[in-house]
Length: 504
Image (cartoon, rainbow, N blue to C red; front, side, top):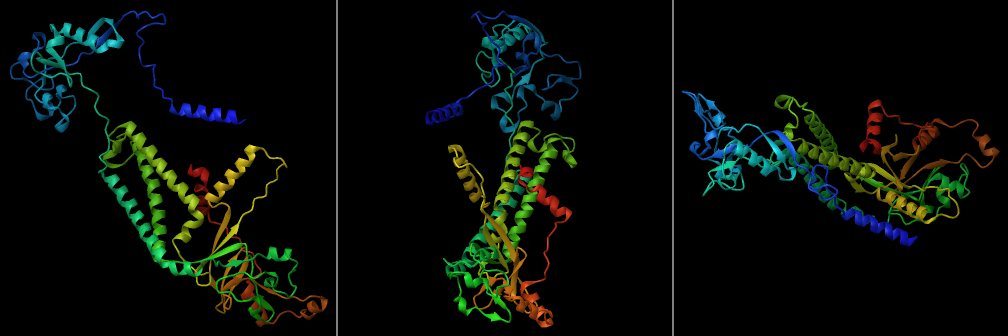
């Protein structure tokens, strides 16, 4: 088993280092038996322009002669006037100008064009020499291998009096990265990065005292289901905290010091869940909105390049394909793929950091002092599998658990706003349960009320509650109503679009 696994790894490693290239555009010189392929005829072959420094150096058959009143211009034709526009069409400059035009080619002018030729014995593997020979013979150029050079390889000088204008392929266009749209990308993303850096430094200094005070002492609450499993039934007249072991909590006091008011009692609940307090900051809120705006701008920027790919941009770019990429389709496609990759990475990072993102841009405080309380609840996956699990399944489970932990999917993060009751008590609502702050312990816990331990206790309450007691209970436990938040159409649509499938 191990041998096969190592062999597979080695095979993949060898494949990763292998290289390949296309061969179907390369013409074979020899057949399968090793014989040189039979020559073939090639018709209507276009000849390159012959370029000279002076027209008198042109071969006699290519020496221009213009009608009276016209002049032979750099474009290879006769005109009444050689304007700058006509001169700029010099085929001997190979579509280059300025600093890109070699100094040896600046004074070259073309002779008359050579008519298209037919090559009786054309060798595809030696095509340039065959074309030069046929075109030279058509123009009556003798000993052209010594008297005619090649553009970019052998220039005028010595015996060379002319040059074949075999223009090399123009270099592929590329960005200068000083274009207006790239400057906008630098400015927007640079400003966002600077803003996040400033916030991170400010957040680190502002939270030093809180982190030092809460080091090793984290607030917690305990779920009611945990207490019921300990044998405490609702309405037993005992607080849920009576069955809970002492926990070292910041600002906590022994449980016998918990206050009891009327028929209600503050309870310590859900120790497996962890609480963190947060407060808003103007700078943090600006950062959150900036991230949202920049993300939308990235998507819009991607849309602009998509429109440019089809020539659908307005204004001067209307109808022009690949205008932002200097009308080069390869450069346009490469740019789009890179931008798509960047946008995808941004959205995936936001998706992974979604449970932490908003609270990162808030200041950490004690739960009793914060404007928000974040409840972190561990998620436990129940796996129903056979007793014997194979090696592959074990490693898949380990990898899955690692990925869940890395992407913060092994815990549920719920941020609840802190509100005040009618009497000014602080509370937050988590899973339809109201958790009220105990001023003495500085911890949040739900209240429960003793309904009596027997029939006599229930009969004593047959007359109902007084208005004062009803208001008191309403304040501490909230209305007997389960609120289910239903997002509006826009919210539901937006939530659907930010799912992992649509992001990809």
